[in-house]
Image (cartoon, rainbow, N blue to C red; front, top):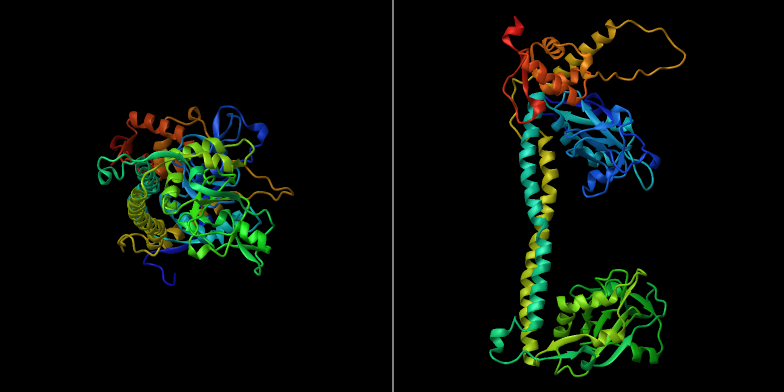
Length: 520
């Protein structure tokens, strides 16, 4: 961005929070029960199973609802954890914001908006990752604190609506699939043309084998992409809407092979073997544009005896109908991993065969209804693209300073950063200098227990903050875990030391102040 909005400043992520990396839990530390271990798949795939660990690990690896987490390896992303107490696995940061500088929800959106740029700073083959140094050095645009909160609240509201729209859109493919299956079921049972047929019977049940003059497996000859021979249709060429010759392989054949494996208009090519049972029995009709090709061994060619009696499209719809699909999939399933239907099983499939005229009417009606479904599907695809882009568009707008109006009376972020920097430098200068040591020692942060604090522990800290502060700012000043903080806060409020001034639905944003009696 060439010019920052008024009052904004550019600042590195490392100046806004502490980033605590998770523990590398060993398999030997997994337990049958306990607290869940948050791995990256538990963040980007909510239904992924958890591993568990007991309560014997360092407190710094503990996570609870409301914590901001950032996956910095494999699949980068920012998340607000909302599933209770848990342990944090490696490759994920728990973000502990400096609340006097940054709003946590704003920081969440800022990191989310930076993911694409952070990916450019990753390295490694296979499982890419961004180093902590590069992550903390990444710069974002920071507005004044009050404006951060207003931006975060606005994004919460707008993105909740986007989520609702996406949830509704996600239901459409399933609805369209059910619609098409219902159409096929009605078409091949006679319901679709019941009024057209009037009192006449729908037709008789026949075996597919009785309708064909030849059923044949394709060639097992090795094919490749080097052109010069004859194109060979394979499983990838059996498309949703007919034969798709965009991915052809080729081989050379003699005259006898060409005659045996040649194609005629109206032939049906059926997939006979595949690792996915849903593809076994999938078929496509040969048209005029496909007559120069031959076909491969994982396909079966059905050639109809008399095209003046049988419409290949009607047989195709019958093979796609729910009743026939259930028979094919039950018989085709195999524990070997490769599912099959052979020529005898295919020929034995039973379908209802109405008059040729009614077959034509059914095909016309099915194609008309499918065209409506295709149109809805096209609209869905376009709508999904727009909603998928909308989240990033709203984030980009927010960090250009265009999402909410700016208030010139707010303390600029640059001034806030200066005052906080000066305060920290003063605190550092007032601390006694340590003697040089040959080996660097890192002091672990002490986590206080509830019984270790004085009766007016929070009231004294609140007094240091000027007598009034947000709950999250007061907690950040303590050495208590969050549960102990709220337990202690409740005690001091009941004792009349602290008052809740303008309670918020978010506990972390409650306004706290010293009571008048305690202030005297």
